[in-house]
Picture 1 (cartoon, rainbow over the protein chains, first blue to last red):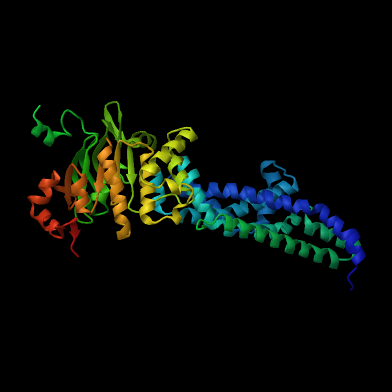
Picture 2: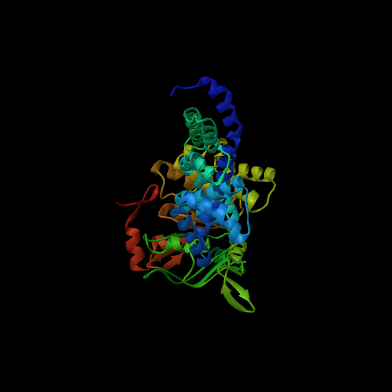
Length: 221
Length: 278
């Protein structure tokens, strides 16, 4: 089988580019959701109240230890029957990916929070910061810095998992490539191109994370 | 007015203590670090706490800063209970909001400085006045700069703590606490973590404060000559109790208890004051 440049340039590339935004939306939407919800989970697990910390723990463990694909199917196919809630495919995908990754990120936050020395909490108390101000001004800025590389890594992993959304009929890169393939009986170009897309974007994202990491380095002179 | 008498009773004369510890005990597990302590601190008074390590000195300060909760007893700050609220004439345990209201009168300088590493020196000193006291940014900056000037760190406002020596960091930490204008300042072994060559600069800053301020100071220290020079009263802590207290002249020259005599033997007086004998 030979590589068909004409097919690549005139059919595959334009079509893939036209759905690239779906993959990006899913990635950014799910990651933003995971960043916020992951923090809530991390704080929930630290709660002094057992009726908050235990359910949070159960929630995190459940979503961490069951397959993402099952969760996506559940949200997309079972939610309508169970709760009468029918989500559009992309929204269901963002929710599923977002919840799944929020459980990973909650562990990352937890590690970050635990890395803040006790003296920082004590200094914040001595200056009479309220609990909320303490978290916002003192603890979180220090907790997040050291875990930025790990977070960035999860962003890239999440990005690479977006093809799973094809299973719930989100028209993202891989799903689109597959339908080009089944329509034209040529899979080589579309699937290869999808691989190249992911390669380039993952690489760019990793460069971005590196830069962010350097900018946040506390030992800068 | 009899001059000689006011000298002795200067702090107690007609004034109410700003801090009152009553029957305070603190245990960590089976270990009781404070044993039914009564202790008063008067407005503007400077009290040095000396004693062997593990005698409960630091815990005394940490209870007042609300970093540690007493196992029994009460502490009052300016007539208000710190660890308790009065509800219908009864004392109930304080909640966070109550602690927040009462601890505003207290400031603390830590052994390990605990500056905020992600903020510049200036921001370290303005964050709390802006967020906690609600000062306008401009006023907070003015106050912070005034205090940083006082401790000789005004030229470092844009630096980060990591770029400063230990002594410099501790001076900034003192300024940061001063900006809040506490009525009582706690110094928890402020020079114990410093290189020997930077101890002096920090002690000088504290001495200056003691000379000019009307702020009460509780100094937990192993620097005997410093304690002698700065304090109005010395408390000797041993095994969770105040074993002996009095003016420095009495404590250092006529120690009554055997424990204090023994403790002071580890230090000897030379031209510069006391020095620890290794």
